Length: 403
Image 1 (cartoon, one colour):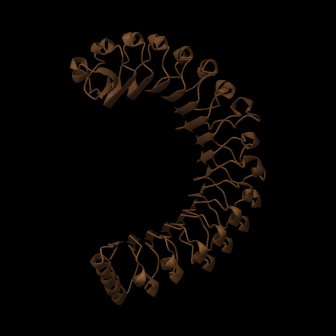
Image 2: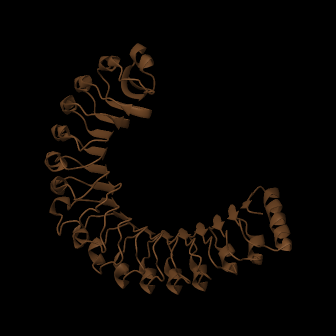
Image 3: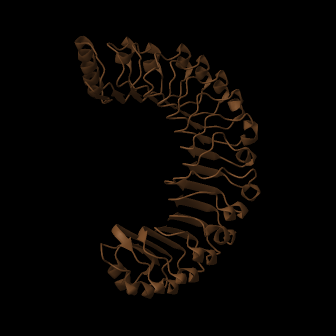
């Protein structure tokens, strides 16, 4: 029988085999040498919340490890790490460059690294041909590590450039080694348009490009017909191309913090869309075609300061559960909003609204309503309080914030 422990001494004294250990190192602590006595240990997670940690040379003697996660900044990474030839998952954070010794860990399936540069990465990455998941956070990123372009089994790739004086160069024209990629997330990588190479990754299910300076999108979306999530938040988009209707499998569309002034009517063709987020946009209105999104569950159009109304077609969004239209310029809340049969959460904060529709007071399924910063009349506040008490009496309480 194997067991999971969060205390080293208990693991050493137990009659059960320790297969998994969570270890916390306080400031000044070093790796306890007793770890090597746990010969059946397969998973080791180490947290050092108050400073740096030194990985000891004898770490290579823990040959049974399959997972090693270290949450703390490593001073250096010993060559003996390469002796852990059974390792499948590795999580490290270092102030140094990409450690070349990782090239020896040829059985790795999942690698998560935070380093200062990746200048030594090309050769090392090319050796990890079994890698399926790579998450890379780099302080100074000037170009894509070419070694990762030849990883035939990679399914998930996350790259974040933390802070670079010179923005990284764009992606190459082709990514033949990543043809099986299902999830791609890139942050802080300057590219004015979506690289054509990405449109050739036909297996993609999730694509995230955040803070990349993207100001327009191409029309070749039909090749990404399997895409279920598209996150283009914090870019420079003013609108979307009509070809957005080619994303026939899309479930989530996140466009927050873009200067978007309109959505094309073709957005109504996204029949499977469940979440639409256009927070921080510049829109005054949503297109009437929004009413065609019959699968929509979450609608967030907050902090535009310009949105004045919701289209009447919204009354057809019968699956909506969460709506956030806070911090806009809406004067009148449409009555149909409270008649939506599945609505449980509604945020109206920061709008110049003085009253609420009568349909609110007959609603029996809303559970959260937020009206902070709204100049509601006193008589409306009394009605809201009466509504809250009435719901509590029938054991269907509603949380109302801001009144």
